[in-house]
View 1 (cartoon, one colour):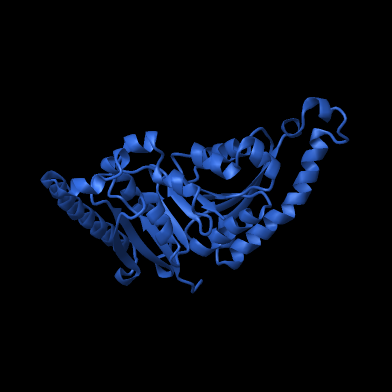
View 2 (view 1 turned 90 degrees about the horizontal axis):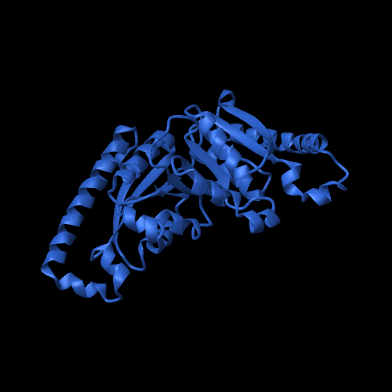
Length: 313
């Protein structure tokens, strides 16, 4: 059993989505090796006023805003205490679940990011929050943090908890190796089935048709050479998980061939295989592909809105 205690920052806003986040933490992370900090950034005025004018703090003098603030503090306090109790009921020690409420300083996303750098091993939050309209037009806190958090795993919980295992999208990159290590570090050894997945794209996609006519390899040969290269890497990833304490009978590997889109293939496999969680590296192996098509990890994050996605760097 792993003795290291993982410090998990769980950002909550009191929404229904935040309740799903708490339930996910309770289901996935082993209580004996996890210290949870439930974190909330509270605004002294309604968030809408921050969006429309610079001197929004002046509105704090208005009686109705003061009343709103008092009610918000009460509601979030109750929500955080209830969230802690749910984790305790899942087996977490009360001493390993802390509550931190911080006043808004720079902005919700920036405040969460700044606090996450204080010795945490991962950041967990929901895909959407209280304000559906703001999420739609301004961009959710999760989307903003995707561009900021680069030193610890960012775990974005889907809109609902799906029963199922964990799918690691593996592409031989350094960040993909880190994704494997992260799963071994955070997940219990006998609780979840884990699949290490590699996607081989079609040769027709990688090369223009005119160039391909003169390319000295056909599709089948390309696939077999790629498979021969990746098989030892997948075995090494499995060994990493086993060394971290994951039971061998809960780990498998899979290779998908002749795929048009890596991100699309990963999403489809997750849905077909009833996986609850997709784990990806932040940066893929091909810098050229990232430039032309967008990073696979980011595309998966955008497409998998009903699943939980770990983005590891």
